[in-house]
Amino acid sequence: KVIQKSGNRLGALDAYKHRSEAQAEAAVADVAHMFNVPVPPVALQTDGSVVSAVMAHLEEKTVDRLHNVMSRVGVEAVLTEQGSKDAKEQMRRMAIMDHVLGNHDRGPHNLIIRNGVAYAIDNGAAFPMPGEETVIPQGFEGSFKLSPEELDLLKNLPKSAMLRLLKQKGITNPKVLAAVVGRIDALIESGKL
Image (tube, rainbow, N blue to C red):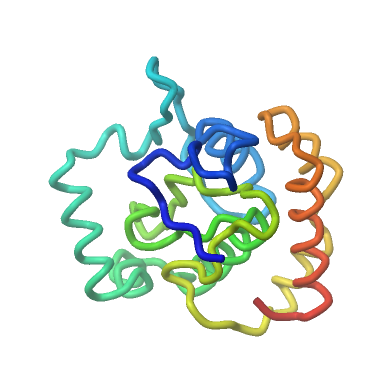
């Protein structure tokens, strides 16, 4: 079952009723380092929404221009142009993290590139109820075999510490937490995304 976003508010969809977008944003910001994925700190706004520290300092025109360029030439091309020596590795780690956390809403509009580093932003679609997530991650269609380093990263993830951090940020639904661990185990077993 493919779920479509309704505007910017995911909370009204059944897949996301167990948590708020703000809780998902904060939870991803806390666990992204375990995947070696940069996520800028997020700030809670007075209306209950969240904003990325990186996005808050960019003008809307700049963001639109960057997203249009990334959509047209590809994220890896932009990263490489900005001097990134590991553009492909950055995008693969981000794809792995998104898969594990159930965030299938990654694309040029949900990341920002600064100084050759891709930052995962707008992570509010993470942690859906199992079976309710989108089927194909945007921007990462297709499968790839995990490298030995990527497999080691997954095998060495501190699952109990990750679950503790998620619970502290309000991601407490047992089915959602079990799905996160299940996706880690499935990736290790299959060796591919």
